[in-house]
Structures are given as C-alpha cells and as structure tokens.
Image (cartoon, rainbow, N blue to C red; front, side, top):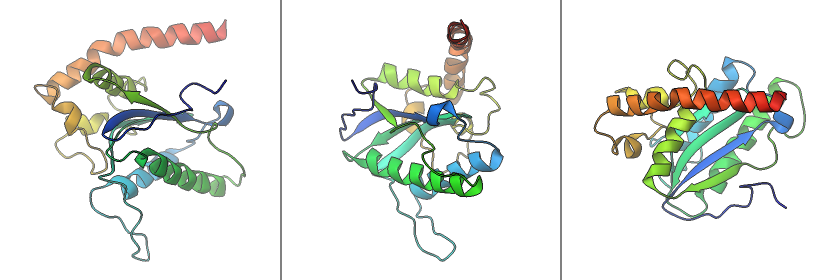
Length: 204
C-alpha cells in the first residue's frame, strides 16, 4: 500500500498543501544559510518578475502557472500552500526546487544521495474552510511563529511582503490583516496542546 498522499490527483485551478521531510527524519536545514538558500530558490522560480543567474540567464519561471500562498520551513520538514492554474505545475515546480536544494546541500556538507524522504506529499484543498485552516496550521508549525523568519506569516501582516509569496487570495477572505492575525492566534493554544499529545505518544 502506498504511503498516504504520495499518489496524487492533480487538477488545474486548485489549491494544494504540499509537504516533505528529511530522509529518516534527518534535518534538511542546518543553519541560517540553508533556510535562506531554499527561500532564494522559491524566489527565483515564483517571483512575478523573471530572475537571472550571475551570467544573466533567466531561471525557469513557474509563476503564474503556480503561485505560493503560504509556507513554513522547519529543521527536518517543510510545508507549502500553492495554487496551480495548470494541471501539472506542482510536478515541475517541486522537481526543480528539491533537486536544486539537494545539490546545494550535498555539495555544502560533502554528502551524497537522497536528502528528502521519498517523494513529496500533496493534498488538494476542497473548500474555503480547509483553505483557511491550512494557512494557520502552516504558520503555527513553529513554536515562535510570530518571530520565525522562515515562513510566510510576516508576509500576511506586512505592507511590503516578498514577491514570491502571494497572500492576497487568503487575506481577501478576511475583513483585515488584523482579523487574520487574530484568526491564527485563536488556534495557537489548541495547536500546542495537540503537539504535546503527539510528543507524549511518541515518547511512550
């Protein structure tokens, strides 16, 4: 039986929760440079404006075929919420991102082989209720989510968010950014309780 959410159903004009983790739960980000490089990869492929390498060559641009609406990078895993307009845009994007980051990571730490556990997982978001919940779930992944630099939470509350993050479709479902901030905070305590239960069960 295949691992849950490895077998994917791709549809155009759909939101997806995409996630992956390190092989055997090993860390995929070891320092600030690693987090920043992954975000650099996101920026070069998902910014509305084409990005160029040092020789002036444009990187493959996946926006607007697919856009990144939310994300959070953690030590041994990552979460992304994306909206794809074309049926298999996720496939192309994730291949480019994960291959590029693995090459960077292996070269930096003088290692070989796979970095990520199998293939990434992808779950289609069916309605607005799921959509809203998954954004705050992603943002609450880090215990210090309000100050964690490597997620899109600050892009939701800022007036000068980064170009590769597109929070507008989510924020349009709220009266204000302040209302979204309260929406996330309301779930913080419950999320922490669930995380504690998971840790206790794993330890037992």
